[in-house]
Length: 104
Ligand SMILES: [Zn+2]
Image 1 (spheres, rainbow, N blue to C red):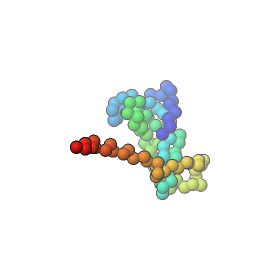
Image 2: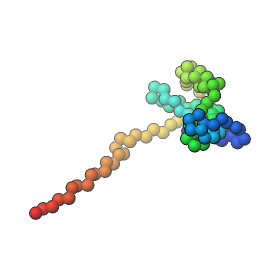
Image 3: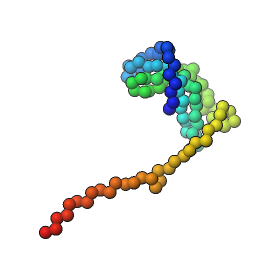
Image 4: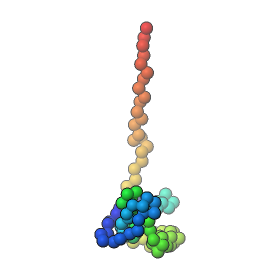
């Protein structure tokens, strides 16, 4: 998630935790058929305390419409090449300590 704070805008308190929220422009990622879809320039209310994001109805409608249109590649404003990493072979398991051996 990436956030650009818009100074001076007043937002209602967070419905989740009651803390102050600020107007922000955010970016979010959806997954479709194993591919990430990035939507940016989303006007949102961001909670300063729990970091929850809320969109108003018009913004929700716009996101829903985009999703309904299937995020078709030809309609995208831009494309990015995304590096993909796998943890296969990168996880180093800790060896449990051997129990103390007391030889009599
Ligand atoms: Zn909150």
